[in-house]
Image 1 (cartoon, rainbow, N blue to C red):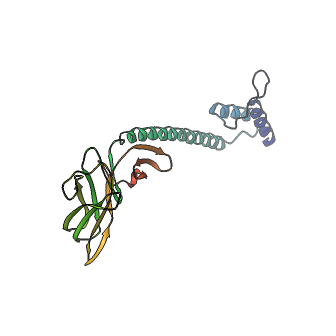
Image 2 (image 1 turned 90 degrees about the vertical axis):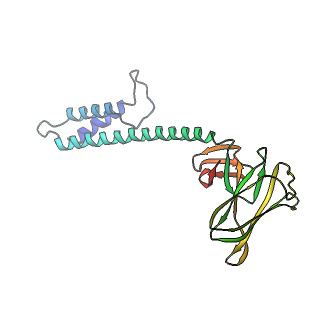
Length: 225
């Protein structure tokens, strides 16, 4: 009985690989619902009438196939959803071009808007905070005294003018923040706004923005302006 059913199953599966012209088809190991019911019909035709197939076993087979087909369909839906989300991410990412991203940096840029912004990152209260800006020759251009500040992201603006109130040329300038933490004079990390020149959508890294300071993940951006 078992051998007959197995033989019938094997014969039917072999027949799936041949077309009406008796030509071999490309092998496909995936069974469709139609294939399953055809195979079930073959099994029933070969069963011993005195020992009919167990109903519970047949139901279990049908249930397993239905579950497998459902999982396959679910995987297809997830692939479609993933493709749709990637497309939406690319569309949203394209709207970032031309905006500014707040990134940790030791440089600051002056452009056509003639107003540069940034933040000093203080993990604890700071005294005698001073922001110094230097040109490409490492000469001091501007010094801004910010006095005593509480902990946090301490925002500041630079109008692009030097200490003599003369407008400086567009470009990138070095910037440094120093102050007293618990009585010790030390440098503090800074973040400045950089122009977003282009955006990439990377499957592994998500959205990556390209600025004059290099490429960074969107998740590493503190603020978009």
